[in-house]
Length: 126
Image 1 (cartoon, rainbow, N blue to C red):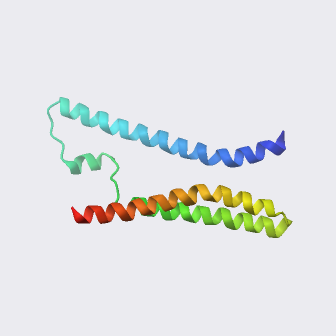
Image 2: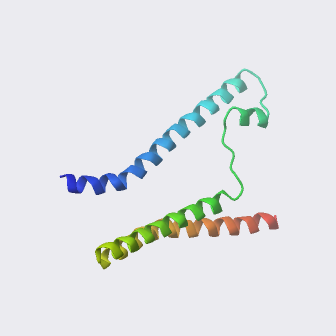
Image 3: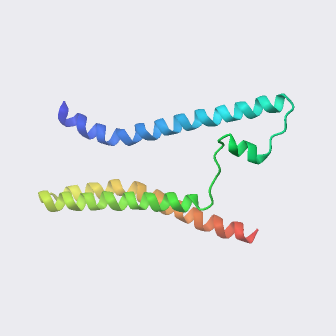
């Protein structure tokens, strides 16, 4: 039981962390939108600066490229981990498995970088 629980926990922990962050972020946005809705119903006008001061997140330029680079770094880390396991235990399967795991964040990272680059050039043309 303990031998299967540890790997499952290892792979589920990032899912739980992301889920918690997303849950509380959505609660914060819902509270801000409720405040804006109440102010609008009361007839008050809110400037964009006021809404930002309430805590509404702004979308940063280049965010896709940053997340893409972070995901590529995670993919490289998984690859290095597989290589290290392979060197320490002489099991070639470990490196192949970790390369497979690394392909997911790596390909998503490449897609985000491509989107950031192409969207930037597209917005520059407009």
